[in-house]
Length: 197
Ligand SMILES: CC(C)(COP(=O)(O)OP(=O)(O)OC[C@H]1O[C@@H](n2cnc3c(N)ncnc32)[C@H](O)[C@@H]1O)[C@@H](O)C(=O)NCCC(=O)NCCS
Ligand SMILES: Nc1ncnc2c1ncn2[C@@H]1O[C@H](COP(=O)(O)OP(=O)(O)OP(=O)(O)O)[C@@H](O)[C@H]1O
Image: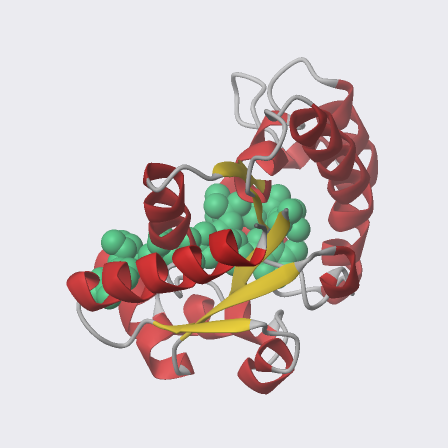
């Protein structure tokens, strides 16, 4: 069983995937892989430098993530260039991890840009974590200390709430408490598990 998990920035995907992992799913996290493939010393990092220039490195040779974020969320062409380096490498690594999952596992792919990259049809089910834009902004500003402008730029780089809901098999509303979220995720997981038997 292959499940896609998505949602806008700061909607609660990582929180949902942590609950799904506790419930027994094998979770493959695209954001984590997107860091691995540009770790210091990788050919992925060299390819990013080729595209965006050496100014995107910190003095110790790592990707300067805040700097790259400021660059690519203000310039769609640069964002696409970065994605063209990172996405194929993330997909290859995700496929390797999936191949190593135990037989019969529920494999959850946590992919922020699942709707944007047209991957929905490749999954048996798609779970969308849904909150209004203002809740995303509030969580980025309050918890992550981002400016409202940066938060809105990231949202603007993503599919709309409606575009994501259109590909959902299951919608997980995350406007309530963390306890509400856990209850809903357990309910969805039970339904997914029972659909595999
Ligand atoms: C621009 C980068 C360096 C900023 O790093 P930073 O540590 O601030 O953010 P992080 O990687 O943890 O991403 C946090 C969230 O930002 C959003 N986001 C990231 N990349 C993108 C993008 N290309 N388009 C739209 N939203 C994005 C997602 O909601 C993601 O969950 C980084 O996000 C990146 O390398 N992005 C390009 C790769 C990509 O598309 N990743 C997303 C899934 S593979
Ligand atoms: N129901 C909730 N109530 C209060 N805070 C929440 C709730 N759900 C998530 N959060 C908090 O909001 C923040 C964003 O959640 P999380 O990191 O799970 O989102 P995400 O979608 O994975 O983000 P990103 O797109 O940046 O990877 C976290 O600090 C998380 O603890």
